[in-house]
Image (cartoon, rainbow, N blue to C red; front, side, top):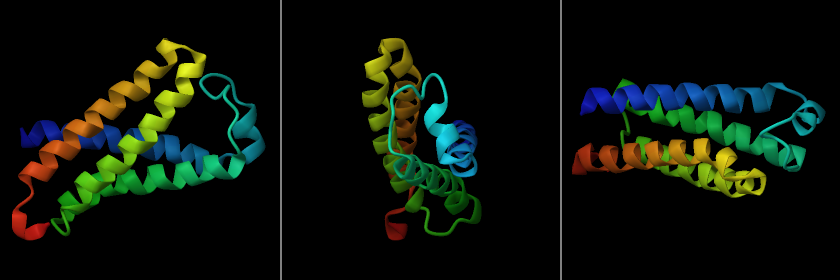
Length: 126
């Protein structure tokens, strides 16, 4: 199960590093003018804030377990990203159920990681 969790965590971290990195690198006017799934308009600074949260969440999914320091951060990072994905599902529902499917599945994977890593983490490290 540990290997499965690591595979899921690495894939999710790569996804959020890419998504968050793009939100941080691209200018605000480019982000707000992009097509699907960005048709729902959000304030530019809010998009940048989400990008920062996604990058930090991605690092939180990987680094604590990699260095075996403060491993309790991993489930917290996953929960934080679940909150972001909940918002993504809510915003994407305005575009249709199909648009909300990917953030919903990503959110479910994050819930799985948060649950399993919380259960696996030794009580003394929480």
